[in-house]
Length: 135
Figure (cartoon, rainbow, N blue to C red):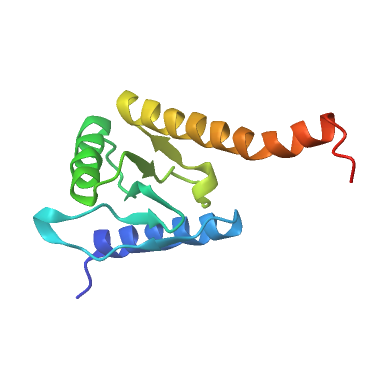
């Protein structure tokens, strides 16, 4: 006999990984680890972010978010999100993504840091052009 909820969960996790791939993001499903579980999905190029996938009839945001935060701590991730399946919507792109305020701010800080680095990398080229490098 198959475990129907586990089958639904596995299908949702697989759908999320496939969806992320179509958007140019590499992700993988993570193996179960019991009470030391480290979320369901991690992003290969963004190791500080993990995803807890949920495909349930009953949506309990606080419970789901608490689980995701706990599993992010196990994984050493700065950001975790709950990706909830939306009824009568097939694509993960139509699902719901939930973050705690703290994890949302962590994600924003990561973006600011990356943009700062990108600007610094672009600055030498820009300043050389402005000075008329003479080449």
